[in-house]
Length: 244
Image (cartoon, rainbow, N blue to C red):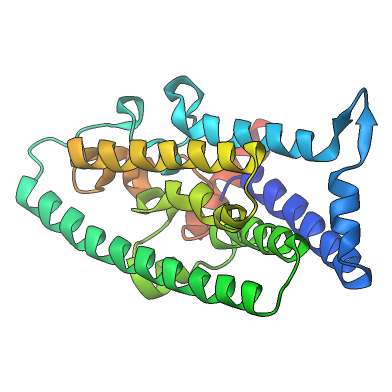
């Protein structure tokens, strides 16, 4: 994806593997770090909460939406193709919905198994924090390197046309279901709002989510430095080089 996504990937990689080292040494140190008092009673988990809240708000509030892949639900990212086939759009959306349902069922089933193991082995909350960090890291792995949801379920061309792109927040926040407090549940609540907003817009404006009807989702009009379009990346880099 774009430079910003690559930076996120690097930062989340550092975060996850640093936390993993700390966790392996002593799982309780994860809680110690989260509860570290930075200044004036502001703890490290407060900063994390603010960051995550802001990350979700960026995809909910229209004027903050900058990219088509997570903003195609908004009119500003829709460029209608003349005389597009509405039946083809309907069929594409229907097929994507079936694939999305399979992702939903698989995700629920997978996490129920992990939750069962969590309770069966009497694990502490540090394990849930590490599971969250793993999902948080995997979110950027899917965007920048390889996405199992794309390969095994959705079969979509790229992130720009991904049917479930804005499911990311509710998915990586799933472990917080077992950590009930105002901070975790406010994040879950906001991510659910984001999910419902995405699904409502898809139901009401399916043409915005299809590359058959939305020209902005076509490779030719895509403004993202996509890992699936190497020629375009070369052209973008060449243009940047010539402008220097």
